[in-house]
Image (cartoon, rainbow, N blue to C red; front, side, top):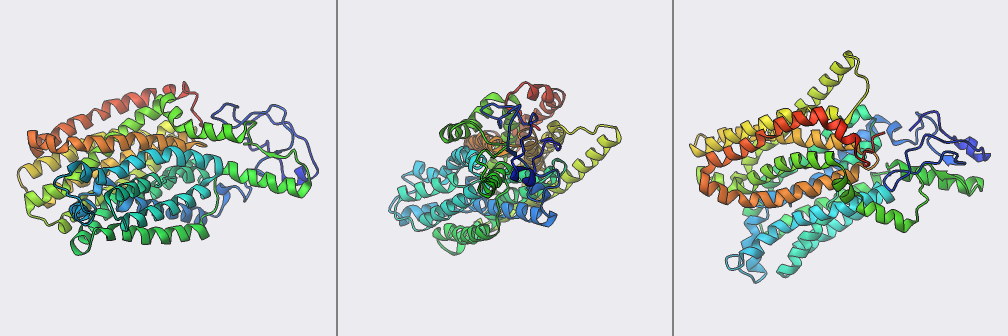
Length: 508
C-alpha cells in the first residue's frame, strides 16, 4: 500500500474527504479501486501500532511458533504417510474390535489409513479462502474444535463407518495458515525466516509421530493413538482461544471502520479493502479462489508439482520404512520408528542451511545493487533440492540393497530430508510472496496438488520395489528427481515473465 495515502482516525472523526488513487485494482480477486473515494479507512502511516507488522517482535514470533505447534499436533500422529508406525499397526486390532476382518477386507483397512489425506486435500479449499473473508481467528478456532471432536469420535468409534468418517473429518478440519500468518505479521524481508520457523511443525511432525506412535502401538490400544492427539488438541484449542489475536489486515481494518462509524456517526466510513459485492458474492468468490488460482496461474501449478514430487517421495519412504527396516535389520515396530530420525535431523539441517543461504544471497544482491525483491528470489534452492534428493535416494536404496549397517541408509534419508525441506521452504515462501493477500488460498491449492501425489504415488511403492529391488527402485526415483534441476533453471530464467502474465499475480 502507498504510505502517503492514509487517513488518520482524527481526520475521519471530522469527516475529512480525501482522494484515493493507489488501492489495488478492482477484480473478483483483488480489493476494489476507487479513483475518487471518500471516507476511506486505512492504517495511520507506516508505523501504525495497530498494523500487525508493527506489533512487538516477540509477540509476532510467538504467534508464528504457536501456529507451528498447532500444525505439528494436527499433522504429527495422523498423516497416512506415518500410519505404518502409528495407526496402521493398530488397524488389525481395530478391525477385530469393531467386528471386521483386516485380512478379508483389505480395501477397508487401506481406506482407514488413506481417508485422512483425502480430507486434508479437500478441507483447505474451503478453510483457507474463508480465512481471507472472515479472518484467521474464527477459522482457526473452528478448525481446532472440529479437529478435537473428530479425534474424540475416532477414539470412541463403535464401528468401521464411524471410524472412517471421523478420520475424514480430522483431515478436512486440519488447517494450515502458516503462510497467511507470515504474510500478516512479517515485513517481506522476514517472511522467509518466518516460514522457516513455522515449517518446523509440519516438517518434524512426520518424524516425531512415527517414533511416538510405534511405541504407543506396542504398549496400548489403537484408541490411544487418537486419544493422545485429542488431549494435545484440547490444550492447543484453549491456548489459541486466549492468546491468538486476529492478524488479517482487511479484517482488522473492517473492525476499525466499524469503531469509527459508531464513534463519529459517519456511516460512509469504510475499509480500503471493502468490496461493493454482496456477502453472497464474496463468499462464492472466496470458495472458488483456490481452484481458479491453480487453473489460472501457471507458476502456481508448476511449483506445486515440484513440491508434490518431493512430498510423494517422502510419503513413499514413510509408508515403507517399517517393513523395510524390519525385514532388513530385524527391527520391531517401536525401534523401526527410530529410522525416521534421519529425515528429522536432515530437516533441521535443511532449515538452518536454507536460512543461511537466503541471508547470504540477499546481502550479495544488495551489494550488487539489486534492491528490488522478487518472489523468484526464493527459487534458487530448488536446484540444490533436486540434486540432493537424487543423491539421497541413491544412497538410501543401495545401502539397503547390500544390507550395509543400518545407520548408512538412515544417513541417506537425512540427505533426502535436507532436500525435501528445501522444496517446502522455497515453494511455500515463493507462494506467499507472489500471492501476498491471498497466500492462504495459494497454499491451499498447493496442498491439494501435493496431497493427490502423496496418496497416489506411494501406492506404486510395493510393486516398484518388488520388481526392481530397493537399489534400482530408489535409483529410478532419483533419476526422476534429477529432472527438477534443469526444470528449475528454466523456471529461474522465465518465472517472472510467466508470473507477470497471470491475472492472479497479487504481488504488492
